[in-house]
Length: 292
Image (cartoon, rainbow, N blue to C red):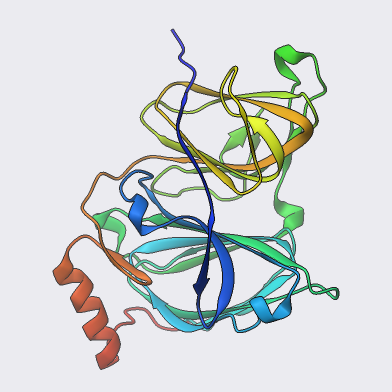
């Protein structure tokens, strides 16, 4: 018999300062490990004040993880040690696998009116993939498909899911072949609409509310903007939009279940590997793969 996932925990994202002085909201981070395995961190950077974000994230290293940047408003200019450079524009996604090591910078830019809004999710890599060759997947907004959603038992009109990674109603997202088998959806539901989604048993699943409010289990109370909803295990999750509708990120993935040694932008399995990474960075031997 199929079981509906209940809510394990809900909390609000918290203001924090990162990079060279970027004001953002952290939905979860290091203190939630291993509760959200394989995911490590989710940041919501949202501001209409350029002074909150223009200092950006100057050159810094990553090893052992993937960083997924999704922009709603404004842009992020980026460059890296492999010779990649470009702009993540509104609606675009950049899925970066740091693997053995990369040094890059990310510099947010707002719209003409100063508004800037995006998210960065960190996903861990298993030990056997931590030293893989770094790679980028840059996906433009036009290449992210939308799947129409049925209204469910409520009889209300359905919503839509932007499918970044995973598959909804036969619509597959452009990001594939990721070792933790993640799903990353941007779901919008009109007032009163229902949404049911099967998620593999044993996989971690969470939702982050970005607009409106909704109930994330049958008969549950509504949770509104900047709420992180962590689900218990089960076969399926159920969401019902509130009176103003709801928009949320829905993310799931296969837990890795390995030890984590984490400091700043580097995540390994042991303290020895972590120390080696920083020693190599200081000695100039951090990068294992050069420019393409």
